[in-house]
Length: 481
Figure: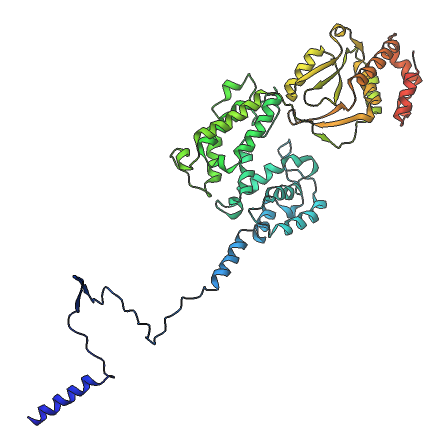
């Protein structure tokens, strides 16, 4: 009995000992407050220490340093990089130091480009840290590729760059850059050309012109296609490609050749953009959240530009003027009994300039041809209607003499419609141009009175011996045979 009592006392003292861990109750305690019951269920309500609880709350973990390093790595990945530059050099066959462009005989050009290699390596090294998103990337890549081509094949720059970019693995950083996508898409669609696109891939192609209006609109459509909001939208892309196909053919091949190229262009552009965005069979309007109506508005805007003449200001370029002594000498040697007209005209939008030219056809035919090729509204100034039937002898010589007289006012115009340069424009008044034509036309009428006038003039005036154009004009003007 005493042993049992002693065991009970020890048990009672241990329950009163604050250092001992208390056994939790077998069931949760339920309390009622204002008619509502709450269960103290540890499985549903986590333990929260009281304010007086000495246990500290663990602060949130500080950001790891690896995140900033990861950002640095991303920054490096978004640059061109030395490894990519190395691959570019390999694809461009830089160690060969030869142009390598395909010649007309189908063989690689063997012209040396060694003199450009120092510039190539300097430029390529400076591009290693250039961001892939840089707006200058496309220009720099073109400049880099141009240094691997000889002077004769500089027009192959964009073509070679596109081939090099296509040789990189699909999804590579350089091919994901917007500038790379633009370059490769430009290589898919036809180059801007003044002649019909029919049979361009064959040795014999159509040489008919498509007109300056079509040339200018083609350039705008191609630029439109290389914009992300167009090439990423199947509906917009198709409409632009269909319009492009209508623009690049002459009237003879238009109906025959159309609808055969859009599908090919579309599939190739989709392949280029595929590493950047998924290709879906769903309508592009819903896929890319672009409005089909806005796409139609874009195309109609281009169509309106195509229908109208170009009234923009001339693009005057700084270029060395023609060699007028050489032109006069060439015209004097011309033996054919050529007759024709020397004319003056201006175009709307550029009243301060006049064009002085010659034609062996009618002036009206020449004016219409120029309007079609250069997409300008031509205003004929000279000759007047009543003089159109009065042809002059050797109009090429009269034209050369007029140009020589007006040489101090000569300007060179860069035409983005016929893709050529025009050297026969002068910043003079129409009256001054007409005076020059009438002066030398009258001189020509007196000089060419006999059939042997060329031989006589060549015997008296040694054109080859003159280097001063002013003295040559005075000498010619004083000779009336």
